[in-house]
Length: 117
Image 1 (tube, rainbow, N blue to C red):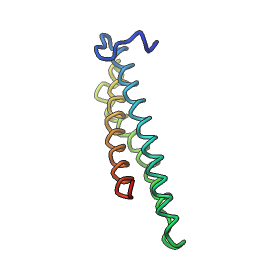
Image 2: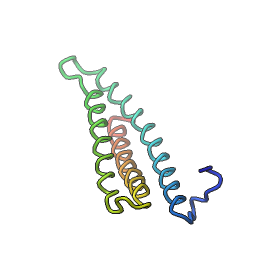
Image 3: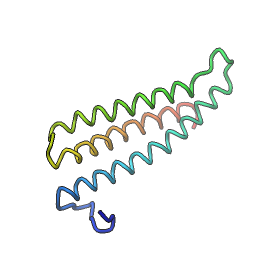
Image 4: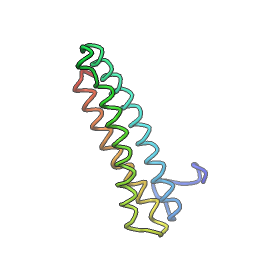
């Protein structure tokens, strides 16, 4: 579906609503990736000040993020079961992903700022 052919301020059909939900999730995911990069930089900076026996901040964040992605995808797949097999199922999944992604972005911003961003 061509982006310029859909007005996401007022989608009219289910396919438009799903498309707009996907675009919203893509935007939230792009924001998350940028904030994750900042947070990871801060964690690497923390590691650079620590002795070898205390390092691990960057690894901890990486592992947490990987686990969070698995959680997000499974939690949103479960949410999609509210309309399982229906045309609304993908829209629900995208909405869930966008919402959880925004929450995670805030968590990562708080982490980065807490480390002196």
